[in-house]
Amino acid sequence: GDSVTQMEGPVTLSEEAFLTINCTYTATGYPSLFWYVQYPGEGLQLLLKATKADDKGSNKGFEATYRKETTSFHLEKGSVQVSDSAVYFCARRAGANNLFFGTGTRLTVIP
Amino acid sequence: DGGITQSPKYLFRKEGQNVTLSCEQNLNHDAMYWYRQDPGQGLRLIYYSQIVNDFQKGDIAEGYSVSREKKESFPLTVTSAQKNPTAFYLCASSIGYRSDSPLHFGNGTRLTVT
Image 1: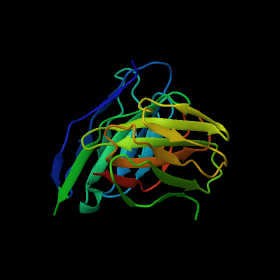
Image 2 (image 1 turned 180 degrees about the vertical axis):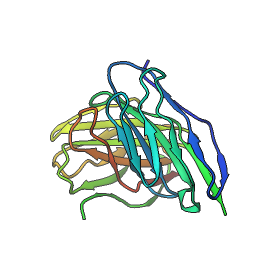
Image 3 (image 1 turned 90 degrees about the vertical axis):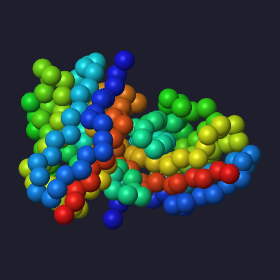
Image 4 (image 1 turned 120 degrees about the vertical axis):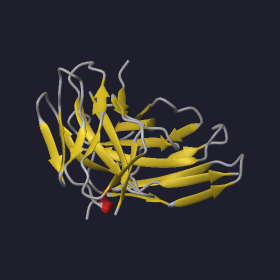
């Protein structure tokens, strides 16, 4: 069935470290792929998206590339800041209700 | 500023009582959604609505009910039939229901039932 699998957390990094959060999806149809971020006590905010193979989404220094051959959409950032501490969700969408979220990866960045 | 407003932020109820969570959007979005979030789990879809006066069950609709009488509003009622109602509830909307339409989320309502 349709699903999204993302890296188990929690992830703890020092400020300015390189971040990778892995995400893979099942390939039914041609989904769009998203990364959302959730800060404590808040709802989810769209971080970036990619709608077709080889697209790269980017925002606030974060990047993710839609890799059809490996069915992946890994989130990366070259230098994390304390303010990046949050929970990150990978999601795929292929229609009205065909939207699946991963279980979330908690990132903590320490000064 | 346009956005989605969920109220209240925290809600406490006794077991056996129905409770209604409010969700209002001024984004002029057609589609609206309700999700439930539990610790360590992803989001699970309760109900969604693509248009006024129409809504569909999601993956975990049992014990919940919704209405969509206005485009801007999509209230969720947690009934006494819901066995584990304590959770964080998120309302969302999207312009349409195409694959490339991202969801916009409210800040959630944390419901505690004792």
